[in-house]
Structures are given as structure tokens and as C-alpha cells.
Amino acid sequence: MAEDKRRTSHADIPGAEPLTPPSNTAQMSANEDRAPAAPLQGGRGEAARGGKRSDDILVLENFLPYRLMRLSEAVSREFAKAYHDRYGMTRPEWRVFATLGQYGTMTATAIGAHSAMHKTKVSRAVAALEKRKWLARETDPADRRIDRLTLTKPGRAAYRDMVPVAREFERWLSKAMGAARFAELDYGLKRLDEFLHGSAGTLIKVPQSN
Image 1 (spheres, one colour):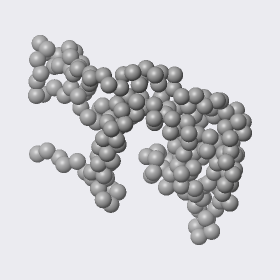
Image 2: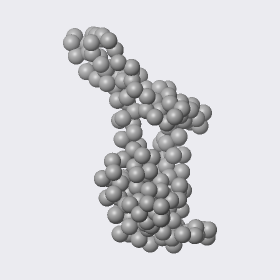
Image 3: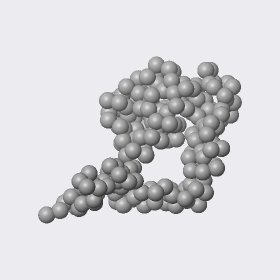
Image 4: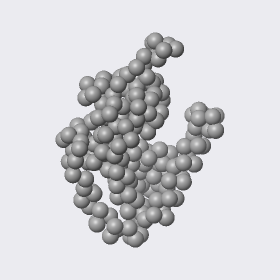
């Protein structure tokens, strides 16, 4: 399918709402230079027994995997408002949609691996996008059991509409710490990803204690 090179304005997308930055951007900007929050105290940051820390207590609020999980969920939930309010997409639908928008043509299996989604969720998202006429499938001539998925012309138009929204959301998040700190965060996330997946892209097994 030939790629449509014409730029599509936001107004050309049926049902699209006007682009508006997050309402609390000014508030986030004002908080940019504040000192880091103090460590959590009381029942959340200290051991429950007598308020004293203990080596046999894992304080979840200070445990990196737990913090990353909570933060990831909060960010995903906040950004989901943007694509859900405009197009009514679910998170799995957005992940399939955004992946195809970036890479063009992929199989459902490849999308699942890239977006860390179970094949059932990918299948449902593909069916929903196909029902919208945003996605088309074509049988692989080399293996008829495999479908090649790609965005249709309306799907690509909706994708182009969402790109500036996603970038504005990322800029809004960066205001929480400033450009320099945000760049450090980006570097740290990349290093963690490389460390966990190794140079071959396979998740490294965590060493087991004896």
C-alpha cells in the first residue's frame, strides 16, 4: 500500500477534538525548581514495628521495581486520556496503532513482542482497529498462515494527528524536572533497558541468592 505523503490537518480527522496542552502545565513549570520531596515517613517509609527500620522489611515506596511500576501505570493512565478522548481507543489499541504508525508493516506476533502484550490483547486490538477501517491485513505470500498488518489511509491520518499530542504530553512531563534532569532520566532508562535485555535483546535472568 502506497504511503500517503500529504499532511493532514487536525480538522480533517472526524471526531477529533482541538489540540490543547495539559491544563496544569503552568503549575508544573512553577514547581520545576522545587527541592526533591523528603523521604517518606511513618507507616509508608518505616518499619511498622515501633517506627524502626529493619533489614527484614522491604519498604516498597523505596524499592525501584515497585516505583517504576507505579510511575509507569500513572503515566500510561494519564496519556490514555488523550487518545481515548479523541478516538475512544483502549491502551492495547493505542499500542498496536502507534507501533504500526512507526514501523509501517508488521505481523501481530512482532507487534506483541515489541509492545510487551499478550497475543490475545493484540488480536482484539487488531480486530477493533480493522473494524474502524484504520488497519488492513494482507496474507504473506511466503506463508499464508501469517498476516501482514498496516495502517490504512484514514489510520495514517489519525496517527499523524496523534503525534503532536504525544510529543506535547512528553514536553509536559519534562517540566516536572527541567530539560537537563529529563535528559538524565532518559539516559538512565536506556541504560537500564540495555542492562536488563543485554546486547542480544534477550532478558537477562536475575542472579539467584544461595
